[in-house]
Image (cartoon, rainbow, N blue to C red; front, side, top):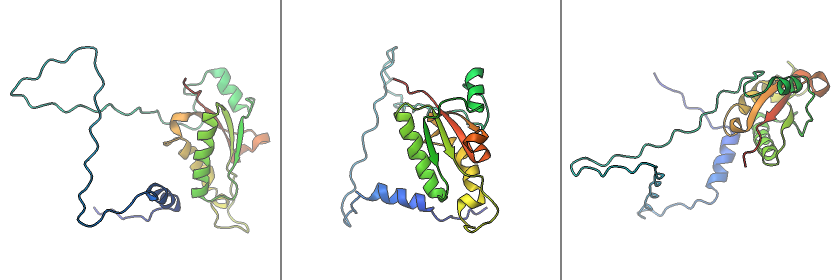
Length: 192
């Protein structure tokens, strides 16, 4: 079974250029720099037995990355009933708003990542993200907003890295805040 290669998105190209902007090409024939030293394993409470002379040295097992449960649109995971009811009814004070109208997927994804990360750093909890409902046509036919793509993509992006560790819950907004074209995003509290 062969896999087709896909072209990188404009956001991926932008990120690659940003990462590589300080990189300098190696001269032909120049030796490669030595690999960075392996991380030192954390000390354990129980002293390890000295290795036997004939036994090969055991490789340290890397710690498993922290896995966050999937973010399910409308699920109450991690919320008490009162907070969930207030979020669903739009009764929590909105600490920040982001309007993605007219943005492409790449622009909206970057704006969402920056907005949520900044809001979390600043200790904000309840955000309103306006995606727009989208339509089937119109003058701007072809933009992501008009096709309703952002309405579907934003909840998915909130459930992926780097935002998933910051987000506690997402709910559809009440009509006064945009209804089906907007989301309430409840962020986790910062850990000291």
